[in-house]
Length: 106
Image (cartoon, rainbow, N blue to C red; front, side, top):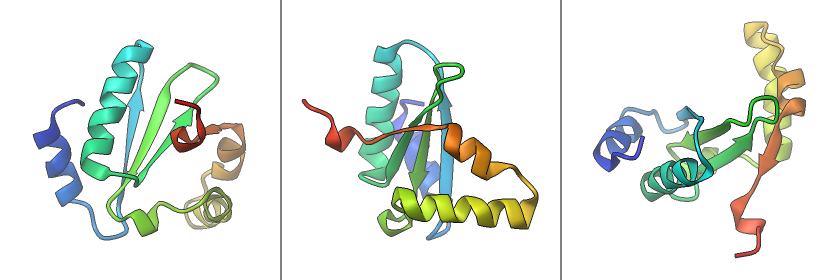
């Protein structure tokens, strides 16, 4: 997860609107190091989602920063995911705790 060459390869295989999800489980220090590596490759196109049920941290890394939609757009997209794929994504989405590190004190 912290290998920049691997992450760069992953990013290069995404379509323009592509996204990759990473499920991190481990110490806070390890998760932060992994997040820093993902951000080094994907920049501000990374959304962090803290999963309260198990303490995991899910990273959604988008190829294009324009595809890293704001929270409201993501909520609307969750309904589209349910319609297209039959997944209960809206309920899952509501259960997630979103975290924007840009809004946290240093």
